[in-house]
Amino acid sequence: MPKTSAAAPADLLADWAALLRRCGATADPEPYGRDLLGRWAEPQRRYHTTDHLRAVLGHVDALAGHAADPDAVRLAAWFHDAVYRPDRSENEERSAALAVRALTEAGLPGPRVAEVARLVRLTVTHHPEPGDRDGEVLCDADLAVLGGTPEAYARYAAAVREEYAFVPEPDFRAGRAAVLRQLLALPALYRTHAARGSFDAPARTNLAAELGTLEG
Image 1 (spheres, rainbow, N blue to C red):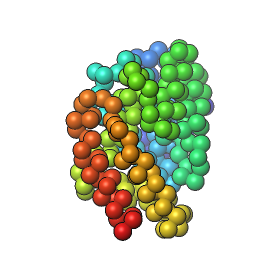
Image 2: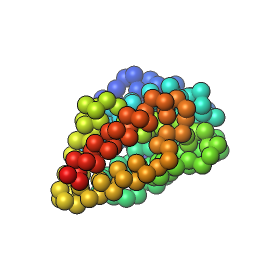
Image 3: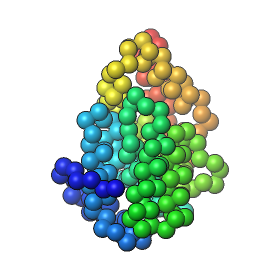
């Protein structure tokens, strides 16, 4: 399954190798890490890049005390956008299938592989069930970008627009506005106490501000 790719960030590759070994890999982790990092660096990406992967992993580390299986969440973070085509709707399912294929081939135990795939699929809705501590950590880490500074949020929103450059402006504005309204209607954007305290209020401010520009 692994393919040869261009030079990968050495720190991320080392973190991946250590993670996979901790999780019971029987194969050399490096080729799998290089394949994943090559995917995260594909040219169609503007937001869903290696920088996003690095940010999500950092947030998972910060929230790891809430997780039942922090390493399963870390693996899911590596795979959650590993397949990403902005013109496709099945990215999460294809990413989950990639996780099953790669982690099984690398020798990880079946139950952990299944948990990683479940978590990846959860990023379709970002709606973990009550008590799903691993799902809460992954979803909060993935959505943490919404609660950044106004400047960071503006960069995020601009990058998302670049990924959807093929969509005409009126259609993009309507679709994006619908997504933002759906997020603002949620009773809780974040599930962990730490993420709620850090991100909820600024996220709602950022979302409302972007919605105002789209509808103005």
